[in-house]
Image (cartoon, rainbow, N blue to C red):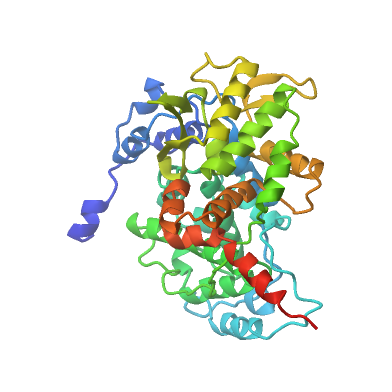
Length: 455
């Protein structure tokens, strides 16, 4: 072993270290506090990396959310259609390697356009997972507590298995990203095993390219690019851990995907006003819903940031009240509350009687149909039902989502003379190009011009 390789090699560990790491990984994924001293008995560099992660926030009922997200991998994971005999019957050469001819033949065949009627419609919704893919990462549904590595990984040795597990636990913090990347990893391992590959070291760029081509038959380009990015990152992690010598996904190009206009439905100002004004405010649930939707419209808040707010995140500063949003990447985004939003939040807090519970969730789940609120936070999936119910009640036919109100707020701001630069700052976007995707002011200009066609 060379000097550089030796410098990066992990020190010898006691036999029980892997089991302890799996247990600690489960603690992290569940969001459970890990103050148990026995978990820190062995202070190897890998355990140190796990132990140094920031302490999870009090869950307020959200502790199981990472498990729930990861459990969806088995329930809603995607599976590739049969890639054809070229992939499934790839034969072994005398040297033990995979012959590339069948794989290349499959690549060429995959480029032949299929009849429109038989071509699957690209969608981001996932098809049921195959038995092999469902078994690839069974430990995900229980937070990695007893993870069974995919066969491709297991046959690559114990170090590969540990490194595979650590990729999801150490390098990824967002539970949704974790679930999406785990799904991609499970699918690729299933595909590679079907191609006759025995270990991770046998994977070459042509195999990754064949997988990408097959994905493109059933998924939209954005989904394919995300899956490829996940596998690239996984192999980068394995390269650093000296599990594989090179990243076979690095040279593989994904599909071309250029987005100049967002797909999120946007409400007109009159529609948004009708929806908000139509919410009955004589009941507590109505006050909550108006404040919640108003927050997304007037502060351009993402639904994840909205449901994560605590009572203390609505606070006075000088003569105005401000809102603090917990955005992606652990960022705190603070901005003054619009006067309508300020009034609606005060009315909701006063009626709910939760103003003194500063550390409690701001928007709380309802107790069935009782009209009362619980101490549990409103969940994003329940918020989707909320906004769709309110849109139907207002007679709005648009298929709204939570993101509709973020996009509606940005569009209304720009229509009223706001600048793209300031819209970017309010929305907490890293790039103005992202903000521009939400801008639908051009739709109205286009419609006005089209209406000039008079026969």
